[in-house]
Length: 225
Image 1 (cartoon, helix red, strand yellow):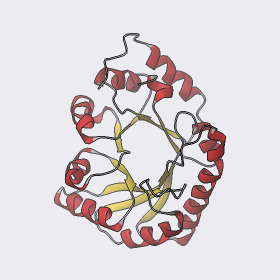
Image 2: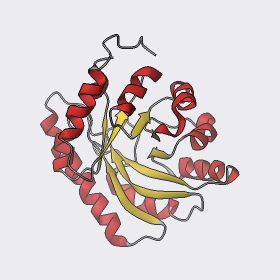
Image 3: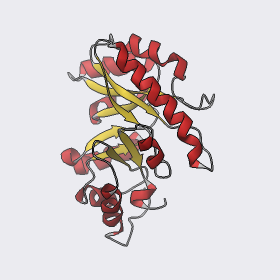
Image 4: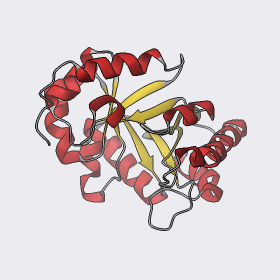
C-alpha cells in the first residue's frame, strides 16, 4: 500500500462533497485498492458505508483493523485458490462470471455456514481480454447459478471498456441496465435484482443517469494513487 496521505481531511472533504451529490437510493462503494487503513478509516468516518477491495492480500489487514465498521465488497477477479478466504471475509462478491466460480464459492460458503450475496459481472464491452459473462449469456448463467444453495444473485456489475471520452460508456451502461430489467422480469427463484453496480470516478454520474444503484469510486475519494 502506498504511504498515507499526509494532508488529513482531504479525504473527508472529498467524501462529503461526493455524497452531497449522490441521489437517494444509490450506494457509494469506496474502491480502496492500494489505500491504507488510515485513509479508509477517514472515508468511513466521513460517511462511507461500503468498501470495495480488489486484492485479498490488501484486504486482509484492512478488514482485520476496521471489521464491522463497513460492508465489504470484493470487486476484483476471484482467484480459485483464494476463493475460500474471499467467501469468509466479504459481505458481497461482485465479480461472479461463470458456473465454475459460482459453484466453488457456493461450496466454500456451505463450509462456512453462510449464504453469500453475489453480483454477476457482465462484460458489456464484449472484450476478449476482460473478465465477465457476455451480455447474451448472462440470463443463462443467472438461471444456472440460481439453483445453488449458498449464494444468492442480487444483481449485476459491469465495468465497460476503457475510453478517453467517458460519455461513450453510456450505451454499455444502458445495455446492462436493460439486461438487469430483463432478468428481474423473469422472476427466477432465488434471484433478486436489487443492485446494479456500474460507474467509477470518471463515469459515475453517467452510470447513475443510466440506472446504477451502486457506484464504485476510488480516486474521486482518495485522490490519485
